Length: 594
Image (cartoon, rainbow, N blue to C red; front, side, top):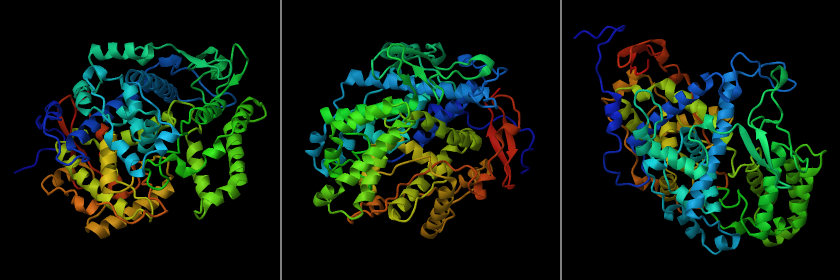
């Protein structure tokens, strides 16, 4: 039988709306904690929606007062900022601000109770570990869906599982921790052709009543209400403003070097001072209300909840003079980075307290351990003065690489996408087994398909936590900030482990031709749960943090096989072929774009 011609192919194949309509209609898995292929497909659909959202925002001339023909540059810079990138940067910062309002609105309805240091110390470690399993989720209806910008930030927040766990534990928002990404609802409101996010009007009205904001981000005010930390005066600060000769106004809240003067007390506010003020505020809360600081509720090795008294630093922090010094650093004009000055002061106090600490703590390398504790604490405030213990703006930016990668691979439009997802799930559980077995060696790095399933798993936080606690004995964190050099070493290390353990290459071609050929071969099955049983031995002091980020051009074994999906122009609904770089065949895809 002759193969079809490469240039034109008759219409046919599975329609995507049929594939999407069949998602989330089957029974749940018998094994809690497992990832389902429906969730992976729903995640791919959301990622494509976010990809098109970013492209639309960058191409929208005049949004937020940023025009393509206008010159926009930073003060003192000779080069112009790309208008599209600047629009997206302002969009993300405003989205994070709106997400915070949405989060506060939900918390206000559910009356969370922040635990104190004493209440946490009353529980055993085993009881604290159960906290992540015992929380009840919110029942999300289609009317509860937020706007796409808020959903995008929530998505990025969940992909920092250690931060998400500690924030929910520290603020008593266990109902948010237990609430997974509502894949079924998201699948219903994303159009399978345009990939526009279109919830019903009832969702829009509910969001506006909950937050006092408009559903559409561009309809919100261009003014940020910034409260002075000293006199509590509300100041009107522009989100983004361009002054004469195209120079960014330093009063712009979205500008990294913002400087805004309070209209009442003349205090000059900038982002670094606001970060230091946030630390001072939380320091006062631990002294007066015994609310623990972020970075002190999870074990340094296992990332599991632990009693705050284990850190043995509350006597050091319970010092009003430390709070006064922190406020003083904020007000001194000669201190360029108040948070760094506060950190140096705390470290000097640790050295002063060390003889007393050694009387009650016999651990070896004690100074190094305390340095690690305070590094984790201060990392929650570095460049971050939001409600959360991580700045979610770079968290959203860091997902752009992964979103671009999933769009370029084009799995969502593949006729064998479900088989690809099923195979990826099998490889993911093999990856977790390697991670659990080699914690003390180095970081394990996932391939693209494994990373997709890993991301999908983390977007069901309670389910992910249950799997980690039951089958691995530690909480595997995800971090997108590793250097390429570290990732290179980790990738090669993981490839060697995978080859030795399973006698299967870790890297594989991901083009459509190769994915279709795999559809006729058996999928790798997840390993038996007996092989994931928690080890009885004490975990190694050298923790495997499993810190990964998406790898797009890391290895030529598969990166060169990515199809150029945009190379062929087809009419909507038609089928065509692109040549995969592997040279083994043409890469079919179904085009739904105009």
